[in-house]
Structures are given as C-alpha cells and as structure tokens.
Image (cartoon, rainbow, N blue to C red; front, side, top):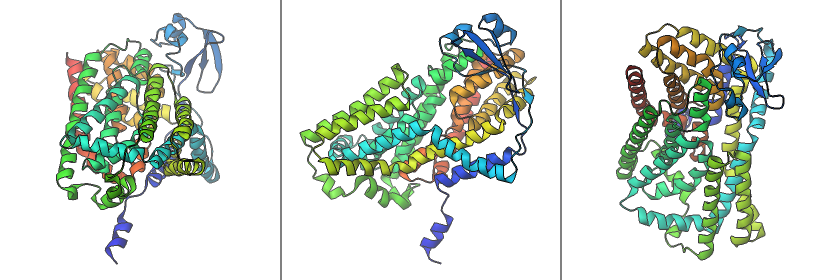
Length: 510
C-alpha cells in the first residue's frame, strides 16, 4: 500500500462526520437519561401577566408583580421582564418533575435523527443566508483584483512586524466578544484575513487561532456582554457590575495568554514551516487562498479597486455598529451585505455576466460552512425534543448542594462545562439555569456573582472544543481537521483551566 493510500485511510473525519457522530451519541443518551422538565415562568407583555407552565404543559396566569416572583422563589426584578431583558422562559426552582419519555421505537428514532437535521437547517436559515451572501460578496471583490492588490500592500507594511497582526486581530475580536458577544459574525473575517496571515509567513491554523481564540476567549471572559453576563446576572438576581473586577482580570489574563501562546506557535512556523500542524496542506492552502503569487506580486492597485475595498470594509463597520448598538441579528446583517452587493454591481466594473458568476462562485465556496451551521443545531433539537436538558441540570444541582465553598464553585464550573456542551445558547442557558443554581450560592455562603463567573467561564471554555459550537464551522472554512485543532489547543486549554480554578478560589476567599 502506498503512502498516499495510508494517509487517506488514517485521515480524521470531516466536520460533517464529527457532528453526525455527536448527534448519534446524543440520540443514544436519550434512551438512558430520563425525560423531565422544570416549570417555567414567562412574561406575557400583551396581558402584563406571568404565564406559569408546569412539567405537563398546563399553563396558569399570574399577576406580573414582584410578589409573584417571590412566591416562586425567583429573585429577579420584575422590571427585567417588562423591559425585555429577560425574554426567555425562566425555570422555577424546585419544580423539576420526571415526565413520560416520548415513545419512538426504531422508526421514530430514525425519523427524529433525520428530521432534527432538517429542522436544524431550517432554524439556522438566517445565519446560512448571511454566510452565502457574504461568500458572494467576497467572490465579487476577489474578481475585481482588489483583495489581491490590497493584501500585497498590507503585507509589505507588515514585514518585520508580523507578530502585531496576531496581537491586533485577537485583541480587537476579544474586545467584541467581551462587550457584545461577537461570535458567529467572525466567520466573515476568515476569507479576508487568512491570505494576509499566509503572506506574513504564517499558516492557516495561526489565522484560525487568532480569530477563533479572540472570539472564544473574549465571550468566555464576558464583562458587559448582554447575551451572557448581563442576562445571567439579572436571572441570578444581582446587578451585572457585581464581580466585574474578577471578570476584567480574567479577560486580561486569558487574552494575554492566548496571544503569547499563538505567537509562540506562529513564529516557530514562520521560521521553520515544517513544524506547522497543517504542513501537509501548506501548498494547497497557498494555492487556494493566494493563487498565482508571481502575478500577485506585480498587481496594480487601481482607484476602482480601492473604492470596492472601501465599500466592502464599510459593510463590516455597519455590521459591528448594528450588532452592538441596534441589537441586529443575522437577517439585518445579511441585508447589509446584500446592499454591499448591489453597490459593487455599479462600482466593480465586472460586467453583468462576470459579476453574477463571481457572486455564485463565492457563495458556493461557503456552502459547506453554511450546512455545518445547520447540522450543529440538530444536536440541541434532539435534546429539546427528548426533554433531557432539564434532567441533566437537576442532577447537577442536587449533586453540588452541601459542598465546601471552594469545591462547590469548582464543581459548578465543571457543571457549566457539561451544560455548555449540550446547550449552546448562552442566553438560553443563563435563564434556564440561574434561577436554579444562583440560590445554591446562598447555602454555601458565597457571592452569587461567582455563579455567573462559573457559568461564563464553563460554557465559554467548552466552546473552544465543542463540536456542537462554532469551532467546526471555523475550521471548515480553511479545511483544517478537528484533530489538528485539538492538538494545537490542548495545552492552552489546560493553562486556562488552571487560571479559572485559581480565580474562582480567589473569588471565594476574598
């Protein structure tokens, strides 16, 4: 057997296969984990009442008052429901009940397995449309030659200053993560930044590390992120500013460590390309992302190309402003880049046929990425339809009561790692878990803000490696195997875990 055949046989499964394996494992767990539900409280703005839904889906209406919340032992200010801060159903403490497990049989299980994937794609359609439109826009900008010319000018300015590329990219994205939860939006940055990293002498894994660690560590170390820290603090019955010094320290330390970790790897690769974890695909990566480099070196940077790049860049400026200040989601972001497409139709100078062909080709390049987003959502759908998420949370909430306070908060961190693997929505996990977990802090005599920190750091940490999260989507953009990412990030994961355990212990003792 030749070496090529051996290498092919030993290759790690693709992102699609990894997600399907996880989906099958979760599907199997539904047969062993009992089904159960917490009663939930939801605010009905039209009636200004609380809807109380029990484990058997029976709903009763109660006055939307602080007294009602107190009666159900939910320590959240009623104003947080009225102003929309708490918009998801809040779990009611001590209300968990086992329910009859849905009967499926072999046929029903196969149907759920297939249906969940279709539903996952359906529920993720706004993100997928954004990705496809973005791919189309990038295809147009590439066809104008503006991207190639701009990259060459930038690479000339970076000579001798390559490390600053990692520092600036990771820091800026981490700021976005900690302030407004910049996450899926970073998919837009990969096709743009990867060629720049390659021209700086780095590999594609360095680009992924700089971008993904920025968003993952940034969101994990959330300070004022409304989708995690703010909503979790409100659900825990405290102000989001409580515990802020420890969160800022966490952000500075974790981002700093990640940058140093990435630079050490990147510089080793720049000086000795054979040490790259993706050395086997270096040639194909450069061909894919850089094309003909001899042609690239002599490319002109025309006024039309500069204007095309400015229009493209302004799309990102508008996107970031809209997400941060106006609460936009992917439908609005997709509209922005669709508008960029129409503007480029007039300024790119490509002609109708080449313009359309470039858009379709660019969208096709990111079609696989879009499909992975939908498939990843299917895992959560299986759990929701099997009603095992609440059972897992109830098990852990019972297991940690009565522990020593330091052991308690460490174990709480572990709990949120597990919960974060299965429940990828940060706001959903916060509202579901905080009314249950936060009161346990009172029992062991620690600040509730530490529960919020354990939640942030636990569900954020698992995001570095969870196949159900954003990492497989990011890796698929550059065709890097999940095994190579695990090999790269494993040591950093251990360092961050130690940092978190130390900071949680400090938080308990001060």
